[in-house]
Length: 363
Image (cartoon, rainbow, N blue to C red; front, top):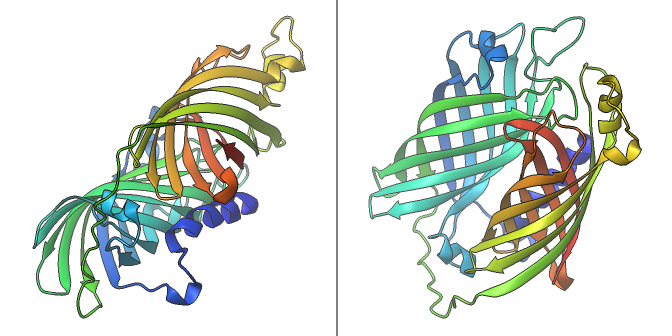
């Protein structure tokens, strides 16, 4: 988990905070949010964890873009930065509380002189104080490790009260999961209503730079990715199993911001043979640790950072309990010379399969 956490922050912070040199980075906004929400029971087996409403608090520092890069204009001059999140999960003996540090980007959908509607994406790592323990905390069937990935999506509206001060209202969904690095891993989803204030430190906002020569040029994009990781299976405490994948993609760049495509996957999951043995399946061998699939993809480009989503279908799998549909989402960061780093989460609908991290080559 430490390796994945380190890789995650290297991947995302590289884009968010990379400047010409570190001393040139600055932030010009500070934002505080208070939220009040509830655990959304996406499975009947975790409904008993809903012991009351969930209060939470966030503090964020950020930078308002003004068009230094072309992608900033394409996304209507968003705000990006990092923050800290705390939530009391209202079941102190079983869930405790959560702490998270995260990177985020807040993108305007509509921006007027004194009013804006925005959507927010946040990625980070969280620490939940009470995780599953077979002896001391076996009621927590949602979270099997203290360290988890933290994801948040939301919408907000901001109202300018003065030159530097804005009032905000919004809604958000926070998700915690460890990607089956430890069991159990049903995950937690928290839906919240939010209010807060945003303060702009700079005496004046930078004038927005407009790039008039951004061209809508469609082109083809191919890439090859190798990824690896590990997972655990039930019952909790089982050994870790090696997992990996080889992926080939074709994408059509419809505009600088977006890509659509399809591809092929070859997965290796060393736990499948063990699970087939437990089911007393006939005619099995370790070759059934492999699964092949085809997927369709959609991705969004934030300059060199690419966020992708995929839905796939297994062409062959001996293990049927997961069904034939799988999903992947994650981040790619592209370096010069056509190489990129990769972080992804593979799921079967709402059930996490594993976290993968790797390298790729595009052409």
